[in-house]
Amino acid sequence: MKRHHRRSMLAACALLASPLLPIGAKAQIAISANDNKAILVNGVPAVADNPAPDSIDIIDLSATPPKVVGSLKAPASVVGPPQSVAISKDESLALVTGAFKIDPADPKKVVPDDTLSVIDLKVSPPVVTATLHAGKGAAGVSINRAGTLALVANRNEGTVSVFTISGKTVTPAGKIDFGDAKSGPCLAAFTPDGKMALVTRDGDHKISLLSIDGDKVTDTKKFMVGGYRPYSIEISAKGDVAVVGNQGGGQGDADVLNVIDLRANPPRIVDTVSVGQTPEGVAMSGDGAYVAVTVMNGSNRAKDHPAFNDYGLVQVYSVRGTKLAKLAEAKVGHWCQGAAWSKDNKTVVVQCMTEKNLQAFKFDGEALTPSGTVALSGGGAGLRTAGQ
Image 1 (cartoon, rainbow, N blue to C red):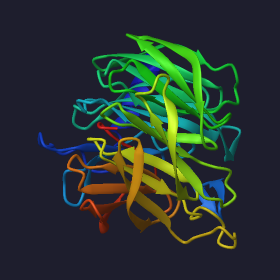
Image 2: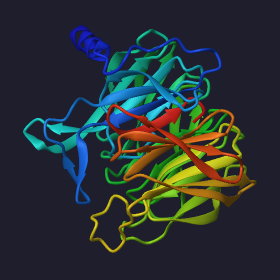
Image 3: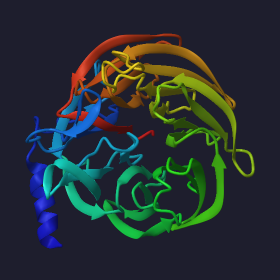
């Protein structure tokens, strides 16, 4: 254990960019987890030749334009929803999952991984303080508002791993088993009061309800069904609604967002909005007023595919009660993943795998205006702020 811990520390200290700069009290941290293994070859996922290590970029969203203030090495994966990063509310701790790794027996293939990296954000430069194990295909990760509990959805074994958090120490505390290895848990999202979590399952199209009492997490056996392959999920800071992106069947059909009424007992899906081909990332603003969604729009397909478009999309919707109203749309790059909001709702950033950058937009409540790009140290695969 000590040898493994020391190896993680040394790997983290091998910075890929300049050391973390001092950040003022008004700064807002976002973290991009970057997968350097995965590429697309004419629309088909493949493994890069001699890839650089996966990386983590720490971004100051309060800067104009946003800027990378530090980088380190840690496993990451584009497989699974782009909420493969979680940051504690006080921005002192980050968790990053690695769902897939290169197959030791064949460098041109990948196999499921179970890695959970614990990152101390308060030291300069930030370091990986522990490498833990969740479950096979560890994908979406979330930390509760109190900073005492984390949940990791294990997409390739049908479970959710529970971890307790005390200060900067993260400890495994059991698993929730849905009884079907193919149920495909993607992401568990906490309600603001920390008493419930919703888990998207793209393998059997369900959204499960977990009950939480302190560090005890149980499956209520209650679930919702809405849309095909529920994937990304965000819960409003108000605790009134959740928005779920459904990946669909991947044939070029229009896919949807679902709105869940969390005030209903039990919660239920009450509205559906069509967004286009393959919604990937869903991000709600910190005040719950807006939701941004990244839409593949066929940008990850072969150029001769009938559903191919040479750009992805980012869309912004207002959240009014349990209804979404489309406000703005802009073109982005290819194979884009996560999105994140600045605290003042005036900046939206979108993370693109192919371009290996963040694409920033100004938002005035009505329109999105491109405001520059931020180079990443790899293909952007997971993106989160402390407000998500």
